[in-house]
Amino acid sequence: SPLVGFALAFALMVAIVWACRGRSPSRLSWAFRRLQVASAGFMALSHGSNDAQKTMGIIAMSLALYSGASQAGAHFHVPLWVMAACAVAMGAGTMAGGVRIIKTMGTKIIELKPVDGFAAETSAAVTIFAASHLGMPVSTTHVLSGAIMGVGSSRRVSAVRWGVTVRIMWAWVLTIPVSAAVAWALYQLLHLSLAG
Image (cartoon, rainbow, N blue to C red; front, side, top):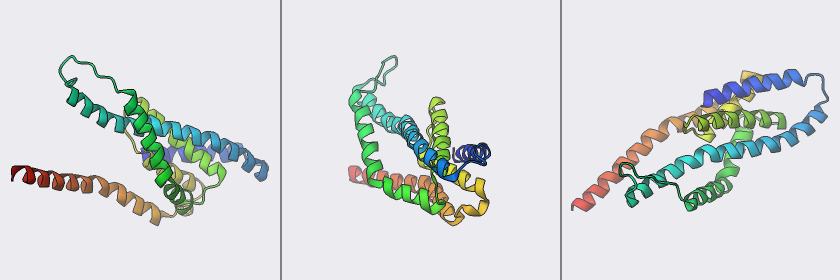
């Protein structure tokens, strides 16, 4: 998904630059500031369409197992309170950690201008909506990071601070094995405490 976001953002940015050549930079900046509000809303909607589903799925599986709805032929519907709780949790998480993520994405990978933000958000949102439609869970942060790198690379490859992106990618690679190791260790501790 980061590669798809990268490719779409690169292509969209090249198309925007080609379509807007010869136009007034100040007028374009004004227009893309307004368009970025729409692309940010599109991005938020796509974020909810994918990331919230993963959390709701885990809660729904637990509720289905607890209620016995996992029996063959039983139907289970995700309760409204689960949807609301996931929406509130995502909103609170975005408010709590969003500023730091936005600062990293918008200033440390490349310096984003309104046109860059519009292209990155639109490309990432399209990628996430496509994944949601296909039932594929993806990481919003991974897709958006790829899109921002695509926007930066459309200017020139050296516009992207690759040292920052390598650190981000190492975090992506290490997350799964570290999470698995922590889960295994906690399972062993719980198993020992229950057996003893």
